Amino acid sequence: MKIGYVRVSTEEQNEARQLQALKDMDVKKIYTDKQSGKDADRAQLKEMLAYCREGDTIITESISRIARSVVDLLRIMEQLQAKGVHFVSLKESIDTQTPQGRFMLTVFGAMAELERENILQRQKEGIAIAKAEGKYRGRKPIDVNEKAFKAICASWRAGEITAVEAAKRAGLTKSTFYRRVNELGA
Picture 1 (cartoon, rainbow, N blue to C red):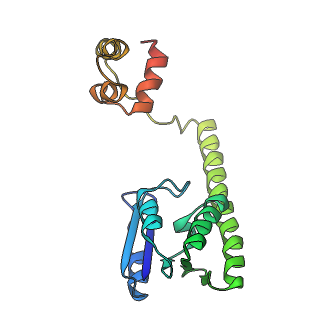
Picture 2: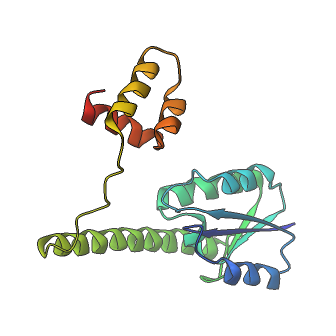
């Protein structure tokens, strides 16, 4: 069976181009993730890897859709190989059924990782310049009613509610909740 994998980095991005490429390849089942490819911890990717069987072919528009790091790419390819599943990347014309395809997969995987690192480096440089010019101040802090927050924290510390529930009541993510607990000493 031909199985497709599509990934865009955010909910706002459009996956139509990738979907069309897979439809043109007569793919029967498609898995789609809408999150960063910085690691392989993606629900649809995991589901696809669990679903595929010997003789199946995973098709994706580009290697960067399946993994952004060589380590993740090689780990995924190892799982596919152990199951007897082939991998095809349309953009790079890679097919792991051939020795040349397996070699090129590693080369292009390294290039995808390099591109991600370059993007992050350019982003850091741009932020540093903007900060130096006084144009960048980061994200505005979330406004929290200190009195209400301390009451929520007291309930949490007393074991009356979980951290997840405390964060929810405060209108914060769990990581922001913990950061605020440390900042306010609540």
